[in-house]
Image (cartoon, rainbow, N blue to C red):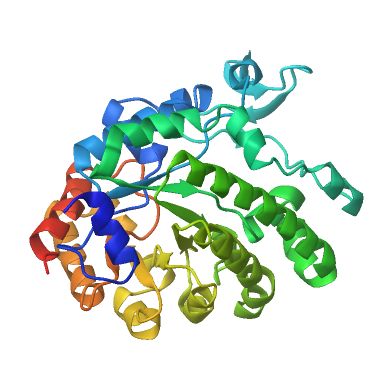
Length: 363
């Protein structure tokens, strides 16, 4: 059975030939497979696709996620200035630094300057159409990657940040939390704009040929907001996005990391096909998720990321076996990491996770 079919069956809560392995893999860890620092990817975002393909080839994942390519003219906007021996990203026009460039981390912003300071600023945030995105050339690297993997991987397009993530991006973290209580109408208006943007991104990725869509918000976790706030501010927008993509015939899974124990049923209420990453560091277990919502959604993830970073291959294999035993009965389980694979996770540990799916995951 090809990987694409294997993941699709599991996401449909059916039984494939074996449990698929589909972790949260980003350029942080994937960069290790090409031996480059994250700084190089910051300076050339097209390397994202190279490192993800390299990681897929090395580990044999059944699936991974990709996003849109960089906007046109991105090279002209990435400018570096050295001040007192420290490299900074600078505004191409003013030459003023806005973030410190790190060797192997994301750039560190020098100040928080959210785009929406007043309600009227929301009007300045545009929603690109699907045709805009197609004409921009941002689908081209996705299409090349899809051609490369064929049916040997399930590729999910990233169309996230419907609710809390977008609110935080637009208002800053502190003001976003206050808006939930003091200015809920503005919070909803901003979230609707974010959802509109994410839907068009997802629809463009679907036209490029992706197999599924990844939605979600890290800031929607019960580690940050209450279940009541999730129900009011996140669920409607996650549901709206899921329905838009499902109408186009693709599967949708919802990523909310951290503590989702209080909101598992609410996540299932969004109507998505699957939920991830079942982060054990947030108190989530595959067994509990299977018992509570496994009859409604596929489950994806569950493997401790600290173990991937600090454990031995034998320990990773054993933990993965327990995840499979808890999630696989009856189908609908995809083995994966409880969140992003750590940047410096030993490659033999990641390989052990994949091996576990082959050794323990056969039906």
